[in-house]
Image (cartoon, rainbow, N blue to C red; front, side, top):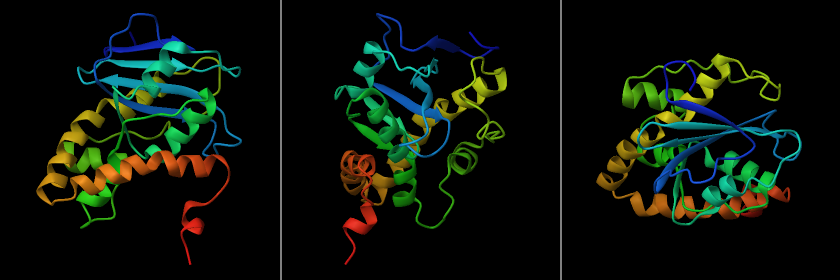
Length: 207
């Protein structure tokens, strides 16, 4: 446990026998935003019941069979915010294909076209009335011992995604854009595969 929150830190993998349910929220922290050069440092997973598991990833990535099983399962739904980066990073780090994706950023862009505010901080404030503190966003995630502030920040990035999904999905259904959103989520796998080999999605489909 970390502080007063139900946040548990593991090294390199999830433990055997951990039950996460059929839907989890997922995020990552890395040394930077370039999937080809910047290594994965932390994976955050939150359940719908509010439990948060942080998996610290070492410089040498181990087999991590339990974590890989969750991420690649077609049975377990994964909620991301800006899934394109996280999925590409996870696929590359663990040599898997993350499946069954919901992206709150894509959902917000489709559901809330009346605004250009689609960041996680904006969504939490506008839809949940929660103000996230983002000071640790650009901190050093590769160091051996992460601070309490870093761990709290990392947990906050996943703990609200289930609630955001519910609200955004309700708007998408109301506006008749839920099927379009599902098609976009399915396309993330293709787009991240293009990212992995250095082909720009926008360039590929331009004139």
